[in-house]
Image 1 (cartoon, helix red, strand yellow):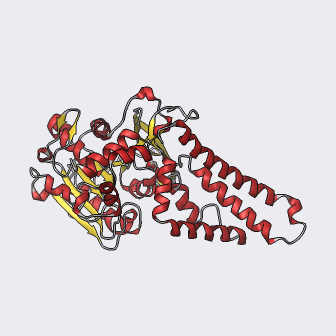
Image 2 (image 1 turned 180 degrees about the vertical axis):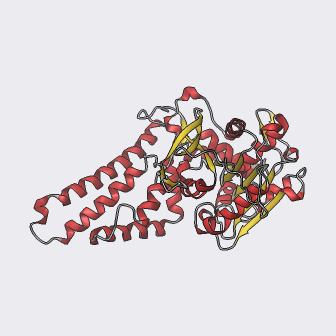
Amino acid sequence: MKYMMTYDLMESMRNTNEWLGATARAYASYPMMSWGANPAMDWLEAWGKVTERTFSRMVAKPDWNIPVQTNIDGTDMVVTTETVVERPFGDLIRFRVGNRPDRTRQIMLVAPMSGHYATLLRKTVISLLPDADVFVTDWHNARDIPVSAGKFDIEDYTLYLMDFMRALGPDIHVLAVCQPVPLALAATAYLAELDPAAQPKSLTLIGGPVDPEANHTEVTDFGRSVTMGQLEETMIQRVGFKYDGVGRMVYPGLLQLASFISMNAETHTNAFRDEIIRVAKGEASENDRHNDFYDEYLAVMDMTAEFYLSTVERIFKEREIARNEFVVAGHKVDFSKVTTVAVKIVEGEDDDISAPGQCLAALGLLTGLPDDKKAAHLEPGAGHYGIFAGRSWRNNIRPLVLDFIDANTDAPKDAAGKVVSIK
């Protein structure tokens, strides 16, 4: 499958379905179609609207759309993004809240590079902004990166995180979500050796595969059941002529999306059927729950082939992180070198992506870190999404994370241990 033709074929299929949806919607919307009662036209228009929106979202990066924040004097403060560090494969961005002075809490959110954009953490950002300055790793779509920019694998990802941490300084608190958890841990350990002064104050690891073998899921079973040759032959394609990254080897976002949907095909089929029915009855809206979820879920990005393949081989198959055998730029990272960074683990009891125990394995690697610098929380009844953006995050986990940050900062605190000095 490693041909531009197969990549362009998938894009052509997507484009054709978007066109069919737009055509059906336009045809059923002609005034002449309303001259007589014809429910078929209502259904055709509804199908067209949902289909056009669905396939158009697959190639559009979602906007952050962070709502305005309210100042202490009651005025509105518009939230904008600014680039702190700009790199070919991803930037470090900051959410600037109007003219609000810098907060004492400085949080760097490490977003996954696992098929979706960093906007997947939009609700996480919204929940943290009132209490902290928030920075996010904003990864780029590989199809838009020229081949001349070189490769990007898990070692490069780790080096990027180290550069981002250095840029923000030692007062930063890092939150890594899902896929980047083991690499954020490795970046912190590598900094502990090379540049101890640049280490973050704390590191919160949320639902990531530090040791995939600690508790099996469908994801880990898949990683063990296929060979690297099979993955390279079936998953990797070359970017077509339409994009700046023409010729780059990637794991296409559309192919990833097909895999995501196939895992819960019946659920997604029912969701789109029900949405078409709601649109036909006039009960749907632009920002209903269906659109709110699928506008983000369907927006997928290509990953570089070397990043995807090295993740499967080195994190899941060889378990280099779990065995403390991870090498970056020819240097073996030693997790025992982490001695001052407070580390908190957050897992969901019902997480079917990174099951309980996979992330907790990180604490066992940190043999040089005192026990009073380690913490762990297992959220009852929470799935994967819920531990960083759902109800469990908002009501239970977020307060615990902020308390953990406050307990491991040099800023002045009140009698309850809360940070009181907000610059």
